Length: 630
Image 1 (cartoon, rainbow, N blue to C red):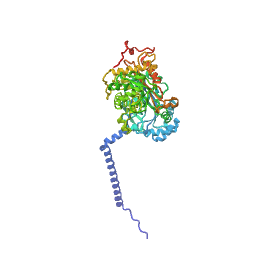
Image 2 (image 1 turned 135 degrees about the vertical axis):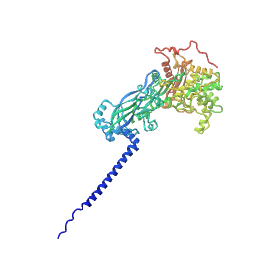
Image 3 (image 1 turned 90 degrees about the horizontal axis):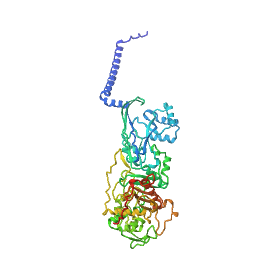
Image 4 (image 1 turned 45 degrees about the vertical axis):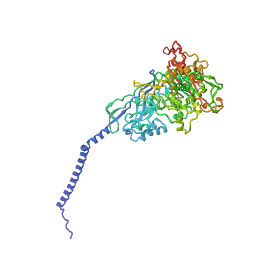
């Protein structure tokens, strides 16, 4: 007989259901308490932090780069300006898949693989969130149109108007004004990240580099509200940037052009200085280059062509070129001889065409192999007589020569605002012991007296030494900036003036330099022919390679780049100088014949009016100066 089916135990089932409901209720209560606790923690305990994070996700500070200061010449001619450019930028936070976007940009604009690699390099640089990275400069109308049509394929890509540097005079002021270039990784680590946010370039050389902090200005900013896709919804706050200070240089465009024309296609350097102020009126280094190539990034091929050129167009010969000064430093040696009492203006030396040290057989040749006979100081300067200055150098000794030459700025930096300047070298016994571990030899003193041997100077230092002769020892450091933001630069480290025992010694050397130009036997008389003003000058011809004892210089057997350098220094009008000119022509061979006419042409451009007459403010006195024999 089948067993009866038991009836349901409703009481037991009800208890089970109640227990389950209670467990669920407790679970829901626990979860609710946890959620409330978490909300309390986020909304109350960490309210300040989370509200800041939320605000940062919504509000962004975007930099507004300042406009760079403009650079002018002394007459108001623009040498460095800013011009608008339409540039391609990428904001990574809006781009999504950045590599795909960049590939699409390359496809749309039909760019090269090299450009695509450059994009990746640009994006690796450190930056702030939502700060756009400039990928390309100076888009043309066709490229802008292509970006606009394909904008839906290019999230994060924008075409933005920005200012870029422009040098309207191109290569003519590349070595003085310098140039700006894109900020590299090394510079980005040293620059003020706050002040350079949004800035793409920085001064690399010249005035642009030295006065970077004044030219750059102060960055502005905008506080903007963005949506989840990073699009700007509205501007909450705006602070205008402070533009950089304008700089007026002492350079004169017209004199610069005249100096370049006078130098021609030859490799060399020209420096013109106002001896009354220290203003650099012209500064030429040839060959030169177009600084505009560097502003937005020069290609490797273009840079390699400049860097590897045998003529070294990137090399600033005025500030970094180190050359033997040759006979151009004989006026300074004469000053040392007069001031120490080693010689007087009447002291004479017999020149048979060479000089011999006592108890030595070596003959130190005068450039004039037949000799000049008896020569005093006037004749020695006028004829650039080596024998006289060999003898004077022997009397002075190397240490006294070193002391006097350094007072003239030789072997040290002399400029106020030209950071690239090389110090040069004015040797001494101590220097040779420290660097060569050798004693100083008497013959080395002799050749030092005619500007050869270990001595090396820059054309700027040579011009400054000549300026001190013209100004009778008054030190005014050469400078390029006349005003920065309307204020004249201050020399915080002035160099002491040169004070001599007898001030007439300056006139004595000045007189000898005038004989160089105006005496019938003067070594550079042809360069001064027909001049409407008196010129004080000194030529120099410096060896590039040594010549053995007894041999003669033969230009036909000497490689062009091993031939002598031609130098010339001078100032005019000689009685109250208004311009000092120093010229160095690489491998020019003859200072008086080759470099002298260059100096004369530059002086004419500065001192004469449009009709070829001496400007009234430079007119010579009616009474001729007396012979300054002391």
